[in-house]
Image (cartoon, rainbow, N blue to C red):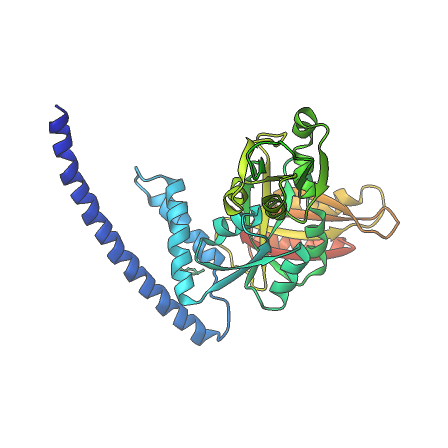
Length: 361
Ligand SMILES: O=C(O)C(=O)C[C@]1(C(=O)O)C=C[C@@H](O)C=C1
């Protein structure tokens, strides 16, 4: 019986081999077409952006819509992310800046957003990420903007307020933290290091399991992993990508207090995506300091049937109890209803800045 079943495998595998050769031919055909598109784009706009986030998003969504299966929608997203990344890289290398070192969650977000065929520019701070993109050393930057446990990443909000960069994409990652050391146990470990956000996301677990351990802030979790790789008295909290990158052993996995812990990252750059048909718009508003002002300022959204997917406030630091409001809307700034709502918001707000419209994840 086994033999009969075994004999079925070889011809099936031959068919897989033949299908793979067809896929390979088609991939090369696609790569050559993308190179031609790249040449035309350079003739149209020399030195202009190769990256077209709206085209990438629309193309993947279309394939998911027409897909008869059994290949899954998630599989399409993952495979085409890398196909597009490779084709884009053949047109021209895309440099992406983010908070390093190797193995950081920002690196994971950058790879999930742009695929693996990018040139990585690892930075030491969020400020440096913005500076690198503003100076033209990178085409895009990837920065965390909010975490489901800890709320806003304030430094990113402040940088978005003051930078000329635009938001061109978003990526939400589930964040699973691990405790890791060189040896894989906690013997001789006197302190635990991580980015303050990660220490906060794991504080309950740390207090229950290692109440006596000193907690020290690092500039990133991956930086904490790098230090732990050198110093056996240090345990790091970071993702498993960092454990692999720095050859550390995981002592405990999934130690974040909220099992559903997620972080949303924004891609920033100098270009502005056109509408993909499924977009978000991010903006910052300041509201006059009087009763009912927030409600009044935001009323054009409801009037125009535009939904708000996020509202975050941040002190304006004027000492007057004034706030900046970070608002995400569903729709592109070129959509008629959104354009009408934005025009009315601008008229009512004391301060108004559109951070960008971009494909919704
Ligand atoms: O259509 C384009 O403009 C391309 O450059 C091709 C392509 C792709 O591989 O499909 C690659 C990069 C762009 O970001 C969008 C799409």
